[in-house]
Image 1 (tube, helix red, strand yellow):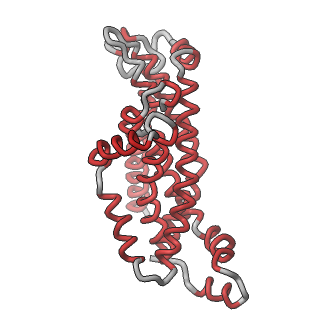
Image 2 (cartoon, rainbow, N blue to C red):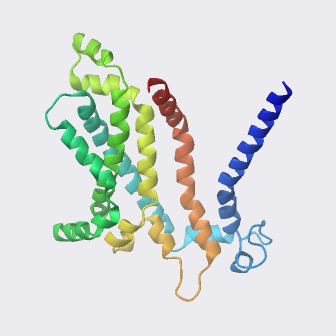
Image 3 (cartoon, one colour):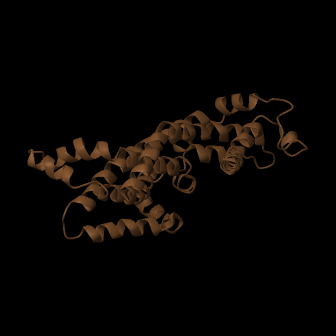
Length: 276
Protein backbone atom coordinates (compact mmCIF):
# COMPACT_ATOMS: atom_id res chain seq x y z
CA UNK A 1 0.00 0.00 0.00
CA UNK A 2 2.87 2.38 0.80
CA UNK A 3 4.49 1.69 -2.58
CA UNK A 4 1.15 2.27 -4.28
CA UNK A 5 0.72 5.66 -2.57
CA UNK A 6 4.25 6.69 -3.59
CA UNK A 7 3.47 5.82 -7.21
CA UNK A 8 0.25 7.86 -7.08
CA UNK A 9 2.07 10.88 -5.64
CA UNK A 10 4.84 10.57 -8.20
CA UNK A 11 2.26 10.36 -11.00
CA UNK A 12 0.45 13.40 -9.57
CA UNK A 13 3.68 15.41 -9.47
CA UNK A 14 4.51 14.38 -13.04
CA UNK A 15 1.06 15.34 -14.33
CA UNK A 16 1.25 18.63 -12.42
CA UNK A 17 4.58 19.46 -14.07
CA UNK A 18 3.15 18.63 -17.50
CA UNK A 19 0.13 20.86 -16.79
CA UNK A 20 2.39 23.74 -15.72
CA UNK A 21 4.50 23.36 -18.86
CA UNK A 22 1.38 23.33 -21.05
CA UNK A 23 -0.27 26.32 -19.33
CA UNK A 24 2.84 28.46 -19.02
CA UNK A 25 2.67 29.85 -22.61
CA UNK A 26 -0.89 31.04 -21.96
CA UNK A 27 0.18 32.70 -18.69
CA UNK A 28 3.11 34.32 -20.46
CA UNK A 29 0.89 35.60 -23.27
CA UNK A 30 -1.62 37.13 -20.82
CA UNK A 31 1.05 38.91 -18.76
CA UNK A 32 2.90 39.90 -21.93
CA UNK A 33 -0.22 41.57 -23.29
CA UNK A 34 -0.56 43.76 -20.20
CA UNK A 35 2.99 45.14 -20.14
CA UNK A 36 4.83 47.99 -21.77
CA UNK A 37 7.92 47.57 -23.93
CA UNK A 38 10.06 48.60 -20.96
CA UNK A 39 8.82 45.69 -18.83
CA UNK A 40 8.88 43.19 -21.68
CA UNK A 41 12.52 43.86 -22.51
CA UNK A 42 13.56 44.81 -18.96
CA UNK A 43 13.95 42.85 -15.76
CA UNK A 44 10.30 41.77 -15.50
CA UNK A 45 9.99 39.37 -18.40
CA UNK A 46 8.15 36.52 -16.63
CA UNK A 47 6.61 38.27 -13.63
CA UNK A 48 3.22 39.92 -13.27
CA UNK A 49 2.92 43.42 -14.75
CA UNK A 50 3.85 46.26 -12.43
CA UNK A 51 1.57 48.57 -14.43
CA UNK A 52 -1.45 46.69 -15.76
CA UNK A 53 -1.93 48.20 -19.24
CA UNK A 54 -5.55 47.31 -20.03
CA UNK A 55 -5.33 50.06 -22.63
CA UNK A 56 -3.53 47.54 -24.85
CA UNK A 57 -6.80 45.62 -25.23
CA UNK A 58 -8.81 48.81 -25.72
CA UNK A 59 -6.42 49.96 -28.44
CA UNK A 60 -6.39 46.53 -30.10
CA UNK A 61 -10.20 46.41 -30.23
CA UNK A 62 -10.80 50.01 -31.23
CA UNK A 63 -8.10 50.61 -33.80
CA UNK A 64 -6.28 49.06 -36.75
CA UNK A 65 -9.38 47.26 -38.05
CA UNK A 66 -8.88 44.21 -35.84
CA UNK A 67 -12.64 43.67 -35.48
CA UNK A 68 -12.88 43.41 -39.27
CA UNK A 69 -9.97 40.96 -39.37
CA UNK A 70 -11.54 38.97 -36.54
CA UNK A 71 -14.88 38.67 -38.36
CA UNK A 72 -13.10 37.73 -41.59
CA UNK A 73 -11.22 34.93 -39.83
CA UNK A 74 -14.45 33.64 -38.29
CA UNK A 75 -16.10 33.68 -41.74
CA UNK A 76 -13.21 31.84 -43.42
CA UNK A 77 -12.96 29.28 -40.61
CA UNK A 78 -16.69 28.53 -40.29
CA UNK A 79 -17.26 28.23 -44.05
CA UNK A 80 -14.18 26.00 -44.42
CA UNK A 81 -15.26 23.74 -41.55
CA UNK A 82 -18.83 23.38 -42.87
CA UNK A 83 -17.97 22.86 -46.54
CA UNK A 84 -14.91 20.66 -45.99
CA UNK A 85 -16.73 18.64 -43.31
CA UNK A 86 -19.76 18.04 -45.55
CA UNK A 87 -17.70 17.02 -48.58
CA UNK A 88 -15.31 14.88 -46.53
CA UNK A 89 -18.10 13.05 -44.70
CA UNK A 90 -19.76 12.04 -47.98
CA UNK A 91 -16.51 11.25 -49.80
CA UNK A 92 -15.14 9.18 -46.92
CA UNK A 93 -18.42 7.25 -46.74
CA UNK A 94 -18.21 6.44 -50.45
CA UNK A 95 -14.59 5.32 -50.10
CA UNK A 96 -15.07 3.23 -46.96
CA UNK A 97 -18.50 1.64 -47.50
CA UNK A 98 -19.29 1.54 -51.23
CA UNK A 99 -17.92 -0.71 -53.95
CA UNK A 100 -16.66 1.06 -57.07
CA UNK A 101 -13.61 0.55 -59.25
CA UNK A 102 -11.53 3.65 -58.60
CA UNK A 103 -12.12 4.10 -54.87
CA UNK A 104 -8.57 2.99 -53.91
CA UNK A 105 -7.12 5.29 -56.56
CA UNK A 106 -9.20 8.24 -55.34
CA UNK A 107 -8.23 7.50 -51.74
CA UNK A 108 -4.59 7.44 -52.81
CA UNK A 109 -4.96 10.86 -54.42
CA UNK A 110 -6.35 12.30 -51.18
CA UNK A 111 -3.50 10.68 -49.24
CA UNK A 112 -0.95 12.26 -51.59
CA UNK A 113 -2.70 15.59 -51.03
CA UNK A 114 -1.63 15.45 -47.38
CA UNK A 115 2.00 14.94 -48.36
CA UNK A 116 2.21 17.96 -50.69
CA UNK A 117 3.47 21.00 -48.74
CA UNK A 118 1.43 24.16 -49.12
CA UNK A 119 4.58 26.10 -50.02
CA UNK A 120 5.05 23.99 -53.15
CA UNK A 121 1.54 24.81 -54.36
CA UNK A 122 1.66 28.51 -53.56
CA UNK A 123 3.04 29.81 -56.90
CA UNK A 124 0.84 27.71 -59.27
CA UNK A 125 -2.17 28.42 -57.05
CA UNK A 126 -1.42 32.15 -57.15
CA UNK A 127 -1.18 32.09 -60.97
CA UNK A 128 -4.36 30.01 -61.36
CA UNK A 129 -6.47 32.20 -59.08
CA UNK A 130 -5.10 35.31 -60.75
CA UNK A 131 -6.08 34.06 -64.24
CA UNK A 132 -9.55 33.10 -62.99
CA UNK A 133 -10.01 36.53 -61.40
CA UNK A 134 -10.52 35.06 -57.93
CA UNK A 135 -7.36 36.35 -56.25
CA UNK A 136 -7.88 39.06 -53.70
CA UNK A 137 -11.44 38.16 -52.62
CA UNK A 138 -13.15 35.75 -50.27
CA UNK A 139 -13.16 32.89 -52.80
CA UNK A 140 -9.44 33.36 -53.36
CA UNK A 141 -8.82 32.15 -49.81
CA UNK A 142 -11.77 29.81 -49.31
CA UNK A 143 -10.85 27.59 -52.27
CA UNK A 144 -7.30 26.81 -51.00
CA UNK A 145 -8.48 26.47 -47.39
CA UNK A 146 -11.21 23.97 -48.28
CA UNK A 147 -8.98 22.08 -50.72
CA UNK A 148 -6.19 21.60 -48.21
CA UNK A 149 -8.60 20.69 -45.38
CA UNK A 150 -10.42 17.90 -47.23
CA UNK A 151 -7.59 15.29 -47.46
CA UNK A 152 -6.90 15.22 -43.71
CA UNK A 153 -10.62 15.08 -42.88
CA UNK A 154 -11.15 12.21 -45.33
CA UNK A 155 -8.24 10.30 -43.81
CA UNK A 156 -9.72 10.64 -40.31
CA UNK A 157 -13.30 9.84 -41.32
CA UNK A 158 -12.46 6.90 -43.59
CA UNK A 159 -10.71 5.08 -40.75
CA UNK A 160 -13.67 5.73 -38.46
CA UNK A 161 -16.21 4.52 -41.05
CA UNK A 162 -14.30 1.26 -41.45
CA UNK A 163 -14.56 0.58 -37.71
CA UNK A 164 -18.39 0.71 -37.79
CA UNK A 165 -20.10 -2.70 -38.18
CA UNK A 166 -21.72 -3.15 -41.59
CA UNK A 167 -24.68 -4.90 -39.98
CA UNK A 168 -26.12 -1.49 -39.05
CA UNK A 169 -26.43 -0.50 -42.70
CA UNK A 170 -27.59 -3.94 -43.81
CA UNK A 171 -30.44 -3.86 -41.27
CA UNK A 172 -31.40 -0.37 -42.46
CA UNK A 173 -31.41 -1.46 -46.11
CA UNK A 174 -33.61 -4.47 -45.26
CA UNK A 175 -36.10 -2.10 -43.61
CA UNK A 176 -36.29 -0.11 -46.85
CA UNK A 177 -33.87 2.70 -45.97
CA UNK A 178 -32.15 4.30 -48.95
CA UNK A 179 -28.46 5.12 -49.10
CA UNK A 180 -28.90 8.86 -48.49
CA UNK A 181 -31.26 8.31 -45.57
CA UNK A 182 -28.93 5.67 -44.15
CA UNK A 183 -26.03 8.09 -44.37
CA UNK A 184 -27.88 11.04 -42.82
CA UNK A 185 -29.87 9.30 -40.07
CA UNK A 186 -27.61 6.38 -39.08
CA UNK A 187 -24.01 7.07 -40.03
CA UNK A 188 -23.75 10.79 -39.34
CA UNK A 189 -24.79 10.53 -35.66
CA UNK A 190 -22.25 7.72 -35.19
CA UNK A 191 -19.33 9.62 -36.72
CA UNK A 192 -19.94 12.84 -34.75
CA UNK A 193 -16.82 12.31 -32.58
CA UNK A 194 -14.57 11.81 -35.62
CA UNK A 195 -16.25 14.69 -37.43
CA UNK A 196 -15.62 16.92 -34.40
CA UNK A 197 -11.95 15.91 -34.42
CA UNK A 198 -11.59 16.70 -38.12
CA UNK A 199 -13.47 19.98 -37.61
CA UNK A 200 -11.06 21.10 -34.88
CA UNK A 201 -8.03 20.37 -37.07
CA UNK A 202 -9.69 22.25 -39.93
CA UNK A 203 -10.64 25.21 -37.76
CA UNK A 204 -7.19 25.54 -36.20
CA UNK A 205 -5.47 25.22 -39.57
CA UNK A 206 -7.69 27.90 -41.11
CA UNK A 207 -7.70 30.24 -38.13
CA UNK A 208 -3.90 30.29 -37.76
CA UNK A 209 -3.01 30.24 -41.47
CA UNK A 210 -0.79 33.12 -42.58
CA UNK A 211 1.01 32.25 -45.82
CA UNK A 212 -2.02 32.05 -48.15
CA UNK A 213 -3.75 34.98 -46.44
CA UNK A 214 -0.68 37.18 -46.79
CA UNK A 215 -0.05 36.19 -50.43
CA UNK A 216 -3.49 35.88 -51.99
CA UNK A 217 -5.20 38.88 -50.37
CA UNK A 218 -4.29 42.46 -51.24
CA UNK A 219 -7.19 44.46 -49.84
CA UNK A 220 -7.52 45.28 -46.15
CA UNK A 221 -11.22 44.39 -46.49
CA UNK A 222 -10.44 40.67 -46.86
CA UNK A 223 -7.50 40.31 -44.46
CA UNK A 224 -7.50 37.65 -41.76
CA UNK A 225 -6.55 38.13 -38.12
CA UNK A 226 -2.97 36.74 -38.38
CA UNK A 227 -2.22 39.16 -41.25
CA UNK A 228 -3.79 42.00 -39.27
CA UNK A 229 -1.66 41.22 -36.21
CA UNK A 230 1.45 41.11 -38.38
CA UNK A 231 0.62 44.61 -39.64
CA UNK A 232 0.86 45.94 -36.04
CA UNK A 233 4.63 45.72 -36.28
CA UNK A 234 5.99 49.14 -37.26
CA UNK A 235 9.03 49.93 -39.36
CA UNK A 236 10.84 51.87 -36.63
CA UNK A 237 8.99 51.05 -33.39
CA UNK A 238 6.59 48.33 -32.27
CA UNK A 239 4.22 48.21 -29.31
CA UNK A 240 4.72 44.57 -28.31
CA UNK A 241 2.12 44.75 -25.55
CA UNK A 242 -0.48 45.72 -28.16
CA UNK A 243 0.56 42.77 -30.32
CA UNK A 244 0.30 40.51 -27.26
CA UNK A 245 -3.24 41.74 -26.59
CA UNK A 246 -4.24 41.07 -30.20
CA UNK A 247 -2.64 37.60 -30.03
CA UNK A 248 -4.58 36.74 -26.87
CA UNK A 249 -7.83 37.86 -28.49
CA UNK A 250 -6.96 35.66 -31.46
CA UNK A 251 -6.34 32.71 -29.12
CA UNK A 252 -9.71 32.88 -27.35
CA UNK A 253 -11.84 31.29 -30.14
CA UNK A 254 -9.52 28.28 -30.38
CA UNK A 255 -9.76 27.73 -26.62
CA UNK A 256 -13.56 27.99 -26.73
CA UNK A 257 -13.82 25.62 -29.69
CA UNK A 258 -11.68 23.05 -27.90
CA UNK A 259 -13.77 23.20 -24.71
CA UNK A 260 -17.00 22.89 -26.72
CA UNK A 261 -15.80 19.89 -28.76
CA UNK A 262 -13.40 18.26 -26.24
CA UNK A 263 -15.96 15.62 -25.21
CA UNK A 264 -16.46 14.61 -28.84
CA UNK A 265 -12.70 14.22 -29.30
CA UNK A 266 -12.44 12.03 -26.19
CA UNK A 267 -15.30 9.86 -27.46
CA UNK A 268 -13.50 9.52 -30.80
CA UNK A 269 -10.28 8.39 -29.13
CA UNK A 270 -12.07 5.92 -26.83
CA UNK A 271 -14.16 4.52 -29.68
CA UNK A 272 -11.07 4.03 -31.81
CA UNK A 273 -9.25 2.29 -28.97
CA UNK A 274 -12.15 -0.07 -28.24
CA UNK A 275 -12.92 -0.93 -31.86
CA UNK A 276 -9.27 -1.19 -32.84
